[in-house]
Length: 362
Image 1: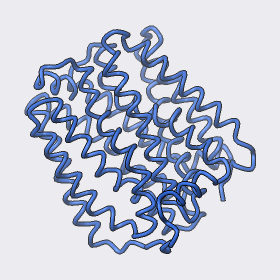
Image 2 (image 1 turned 45 degrees about the vertical axis):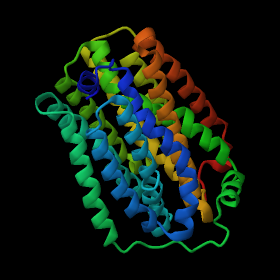
Image 3 (image 1 turned 180 degrees about the vertical axis):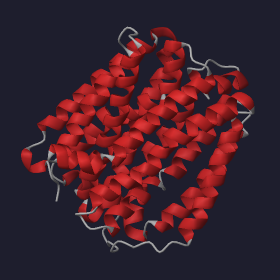
Image 4 (image 1 turned 90 degrees about the horizontal axis):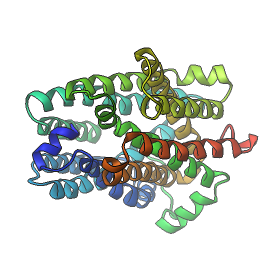
């Protein structure tokens, strides 16, 4: 929808990348501080207000009279989302046995991935034929409905920690063995990968001259590939022997696939399709595998760990979108994506520096 939003606000489409960048900025800033609160007061205490606030701020973005105002309301959305996603993901590790957590985590990520399928296809069609604001109002309605459902759900509450103040929880999180390396991987590989996925519609438009509806089909298809990767997580773990290998091989597939789609000279259509499939599948398998390894290492400060990790992921997203908004018109798609893939390759290298003892977190 970036082109339609740009036309509404009379700015370049590259500048519209500041919308998700503003969202990610406040998300990344606040998620680490909200994680300890979810450890102390329970997941639902943050989930319901966060969902209501998210619905209100998404509606405000749709009603914004200028890009600057839209960026401000988008930043408020990021603050509300920072209370939602870490708490929602922590519930899995609070409530499910360790043996079942990988399979359940993959299923939970289906909810995240479904947005890659539904929102681009539906949003592109609505933006082209009605208004880009309509998908925003639909997202707000989903937030309000979800808040109502969550308020009525029986959610297991993790044991309350007297020491769940922010700074002690931070120190405990960073003191966990190998957690700092995992956080670095979160930024360099997964966060930047998410950022490039967010930019897929705009990069496809610039590289291949696609229309809004065609972009919706492309990004929706990419989402289906990610969805398939989520579904295949448990089978991939059994095939490769560990979540560590799923993370490593999935990361490699996503980097190579993104390079073929967005950096190398345009090849035959089947090559682009296969590369996009590898990118989506690799991302879909490696993302939940990485989250599982981070969350299961969190122990009694799991909410804090997941909150910090979510902040780091959104810092990667923010880095890609804010840089794109500043330089994409000057550098072009290929140079920008190539630079991001170099950082992802560094993240992949860090994966291989983890000792064998860290391959299966306890």
